[in-house]
Image 1 (cartoon, rainbow, N blue to C red):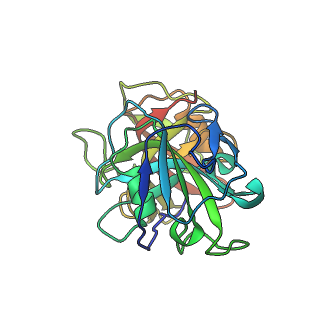
Image 2: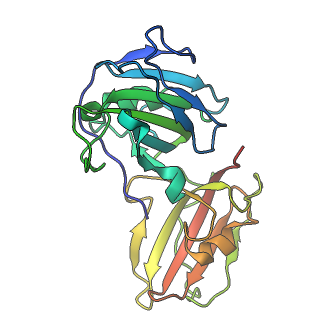
Length: 271
């Protein structure tokens, strides 16, 4: 499962809320719909040294708040040569950013907090203020300028769970070869192939049945794109066709047999 992203340095920000090209021609132009990999055109002008944030499109979902776990797709590229650097659109797993009182980059905080789910936001900043210890600096100088585009999927409390339900536990009769089954019926939106799904989960090893991974213990919800290779095949089979609000028990035989209980908190369908 993906690591929790924690970024650890301060910055001074200039916030722009317009979408066009800056007067000095130093504003990248981003095209493409929310949820799709952005196409970024870098202008000939120089980027400047002050971090700059631009709201490219405003969503209509719940606004993120301090203390949330924010889930977002992120595309990062170098200003020089418009060279791609990192993109969660390629790996099919959005970034998880935990705002739980620990220090987080002010550039990312200002980009992500207070924004409605469904918003697309662009950050232009020196790498020293746009990357942190958990994002590798390979091939990038701290003085290089980066263009970061965020698609904000949503903010969720770290302990988000199914309303009125206890924390999940591995059923005593669940085995790796058990077919997926629904423990709690949801009544929300349908989860479809290719969509993004926001989940909390518990994972136990087989045959010890000891819990080896739990999103509840390590920071909160995670998001995955329901495509082959981005989640275990057994997850794909169980989640596609389920509904938001469901709790699923899933066995996974594989090389390392595992047992899962998955709570489906939300789903985002691509544009």
